[in-house]
Amino acid sequence: MENSFSTVKLSSVAKIIMGQSPPGTTYNEVGEGLPFYQGVVDFGPRYPSRRVYCTAPSRIADGGDILFSVRAPIGRVNIATERCCVGRGLSIIKPNNPFDRVFIEFVLRAMPTMWDIFEGGGSVFGNAKKDDLQSLEIIWPQKEERGFIASILGALDDKIELNRQMNKTLESMAQAVFKSWFVDFEPFTGQGMQDSQVGPIPVGWEALKSSQAIIINPPRRLERGIDATYVDMASLPTLSARVTNIATRAYTGSGSRFQQEDTLFARITPCLENGKTAIVDFLTDGEVGWGSTEFIVLGPKQPVGMYYIYCLARNPDFRAHAIQAMSGTSGRQRVDSKCFHYYYLAIPPQEIMQKFQETVCPWFEMLKTNDEESQTLAEIRDTLLPKLLSGELRLGDAEKFIEEAA
Image 1: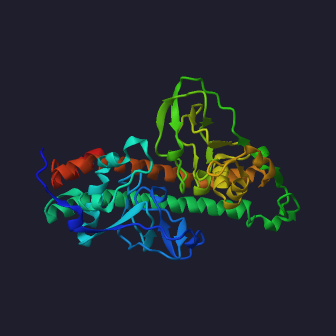
Image 2: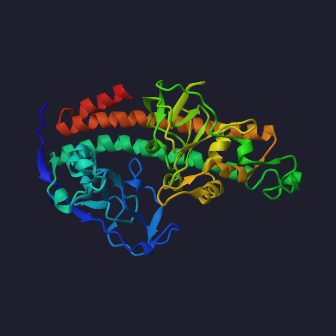
Image 3: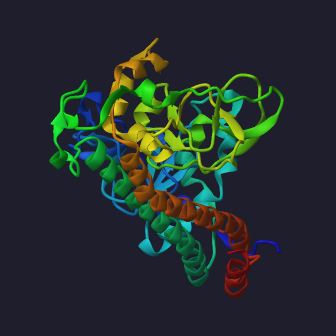
């Protein structure tokens, strides 16, 4: 069906504020000032991830404002969850009427390919100017139709966000148990403590080098030219356990290789500092996948299991050790896997390690279920988006479509 909706310029329905980067001396990572976002590196699926703060902000967004990337890749959209400031890589889009915020968000999400012209010639520094955004024409149905489209798509995204928040809580629970048991030894101090290379540990435990307790870059076999599951660095999450963007590629003979229950750990800057880490739970038993050469693969070794290793890879002290061991030229520093010879772990008897696995396993299984549901909802949303904006689907048809697809 041909689109029967009218169009308006974005500047007629929203105020556009281009980002301005404040002096670098005003940035910090300790939470002083407002959250500061510079570009899509800070973006999550819908909301940005707080990492850097600024004490002298210039361009400020309020909670609910649209954050729009104006440098390659142009056209990415996130929503400010709170008052924050933005640098040159972003713009702030403030709808004139809050009623239209969700509709404008989804219209902009539907338009990323139109920005390719600004990134022509292979340049990663292409950018969209304020005039480009002000003159941008967007689809603009009547108010009732805008509200309907926003409610349908917004409900799907709200469920996806609820799953994300649930998964964040589940992972926090697992990390809290890991710290309580294997860092602070809270449940075990009553049985007595003994000296070790990591300080006092419970009697009956053993201090081992991490390279002794787990397998660093295990020798997973994969023949050149064989099609296999592939994970690139961009697909590795920064704040969650699971890879959700998986491809199939012929193995080139170079790259990390991994199996089910391994953990992928980014070894290059800034991916390591940003937290790129994931557990491999998407392969079948015996299947070998491959990925970026910049992954360190951490494999389980009895009695140390997959969930212990993943929680260890997220542990701040373990990550700090790896970051301090980085070497190389500026901007291309990497972790030498030999650094794991110098990081000791307190390894408990097998029954305690097994108990930990049994405790956290249901949480990771629920996390996976939530992720899979969110992927289905995202596919439905992305299929509905152009159909709703073109007028091809109306209220009754859209609700039926969701029921049949879910």
